[in-house]
Length: 307
Image 1 (cartoon, one colour):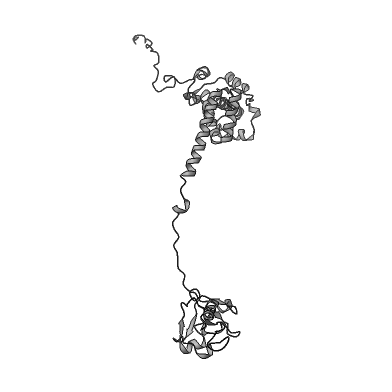
Image 2 (cartoon, helix red, strand yellow):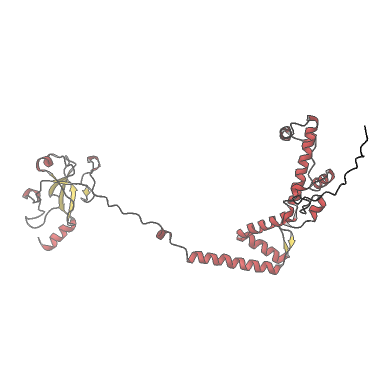
């Protein structure tokens, strides 16, 4: 059996950078690279950081946060560890979960302490402050006096603060004037309600009171028969006959179309009467009995004319 040629080791070439890798795209992989970034993009790269145990401990202790250990996990953390790391032996499960939570806490602190997050919170606070005129005026007045932002904790120009306050007050006053001047009439924008004309309605006997006056346009009242000629017994004279007429008697009416007189002569509804007349309830026994009598105005007219 012959011996073949000895196999030579293959030449190795240096690994090429993958175009899609975080390192090729310039993403920070270490804490030192991360803290040297000063733009908004550093916050979204936080998940790619590889922090050592010493760096995690340094970040947590600098923020007065006690690092977690396997013995310091509470009941909720232990339940989460049992669910996330159920395939890991129990003796190493809680220790691994404590390391994981320390990494999360450290990265969260880095995000909140990053320049990008500081700019974002400063802008959010500036916007919220502008909504409250009293708060805005108070802080700008403080800046004009001390050349310092008390909440944002940075130096500021008193001249810029005066300019901001002046423009802000002009904007608030101008907006209020415009809204007051050109405020639309709310009543004009609402649809006009439809007017529904309600006709005369029947009235129950229990709702009628003695001496009650009714309007034939609102309450249904009837005359027995078609004739409205007054008979002599329907007229009462206050003085000599032919001089002054009493307002106590007149043509008989009834609000009940089923009354006896209506059944005999027929019920004819009275829809309107002259303004010199009125319809009033008469009779203690029949509460639905009414009469058309002269009104007070008509009596005065009759007296003045000498009728």
